[in-house]
Image (cartoon, rainbow, N blue to C red; front, side, top):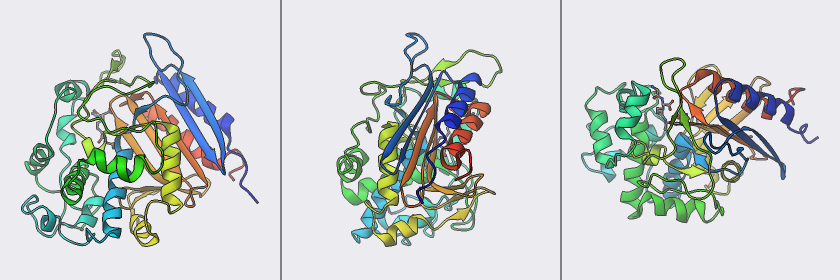
Length: 349
Ligand SMILES: C[C@@H](NC(=O)[C@@H](C)NC(=O)CCCC[C@H](NC(=O)C[NH3+])C(=O)[O-])C(=O)O
């Protein structure tokens, strides 16, 4: 029998909690066997007091990593890339260890240090130092290589944005195009993702969007409007702009086999356990929810936006949600509750 309809009342309660805990606004959208459910709470803009809508665009942060992984896995399907080849075969001398492979990079097992650890040690000053900066990929790699690697190639999982900066360089080298063109030609246009953009290094969000606000480290300090930034510190690791509708479409299409061969999707879904409820594949997270359902997708954190975008393994039910503040653990927890409720519902079906 078809699973019970999503518990939209439960999702609404979770979004209300996110707003009560400090998010100016929150939205969620569920696509379930062709039916759409939208839930919203709070504001898109604190100065105009405009209410947030489920169609507002926003910065998706690391959900970008799944898009970058899809492009490289398509190149593997086209025999233009071998997942088990060293990165240095395609980009000579880029990395200090010839043993680091493409698969290890996409699975956060390369050992490459995450330069954002230092960049955002202090949330507000770190953000303000880079919000209008434009980095080259190689400058970001150089920041990472200043620090020792976290593990030998392939020896352990250690999340690092550096890995998906390497993915961006690989995409540009192997396609001869910018990552923007590669995303547009291979994913955005084929899936008609009309709310999805890669505009780096422009700082503005096209069309109608929710503004994002960073919660400072100091308790009680006022929120900082972080909507306009280059996101050049992340690029192919986190700079895509999208909407809940487009993320639902993307993960449903990916997981129902419309973007990759079964073999490459299988590669993407070879998961390494990260903690008791999450595992990481290639640019893809698996989360086990309270009712035992496993969902597949990615989380995203860019200053001002917490994003969750996940779907069932067959893509028949997808959930995308964002809260418009970041660096606020209680808001992040509330949004995790929305994810759980969206798939587990009241009666855990
Ligand atoms: C976790 C998520 N990763 C991402 O989305 C990537 C692009 N974001 C980060 O690595 C966090 C950058 C700092 C955010 C800042 N935090 C601080 O400044 C902390 N001092 C903030 O919260 O806005 C993922 O892969 O699931």
